[in-house]
Image 1 (cartoon, rainbow, N blue to C red):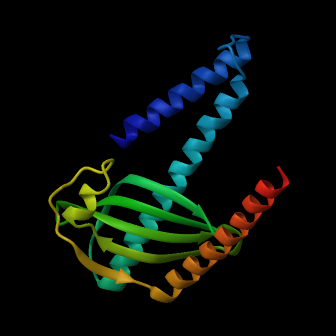
Image 2: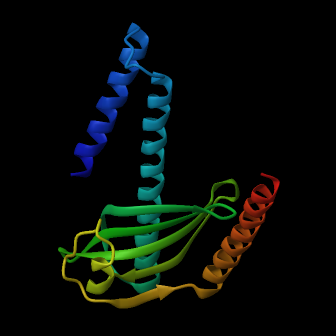
Image 3: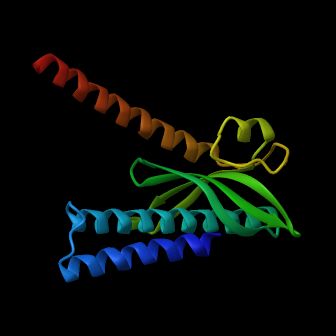
Amino acid sequence: MAPRRAALFAAVLLLASAAAVSGFHLGGDESGLVRGVLAALRERAEAEDAARFAVAHHNKNQGAALEFTRVLKSKRQVVTGTLHDLVLEAADAGKKSLYRAKVWVKPWEDFKSVVEFRLVGDSEVESEPSVASDGSSGQAIAKVSLEADIVQEEARLHTVENEGLSSDFALSS
């Protein structure tokens, strides 16, 4: 399924580029459309790269043999780098299961760290409607708590800074 989506994105990008070159107008700024498609493709590739890294890290640390299949859900948070919060599918001896992974990436430092990697339980999958359940049971696999604390503290500081800006704006209007 993932190759089909990638091919669809590539086809849309190609059509938008061809339309822009030939002078065809969609009634708006085609360069914005192309930039949007390129940004979506880049974010998808970054999420998949982070997911593959998380699976490889888990395999190395746990002596496992999981095989990455696909990313089902991806969220990004900017905190002195990017924290990728992923729900991914991986196969273990042919049996596919869902895992939650959080990967902290700082590309300018060539830094990647798996903050969390665990099997997703049924109740957690039900609370996230965009992810299909595969009947897997919940089990904590690995968590690097020190790095998670750092990310949470940076996120808290970032939130406090943003709240200050919001209240300053509200007072000035």
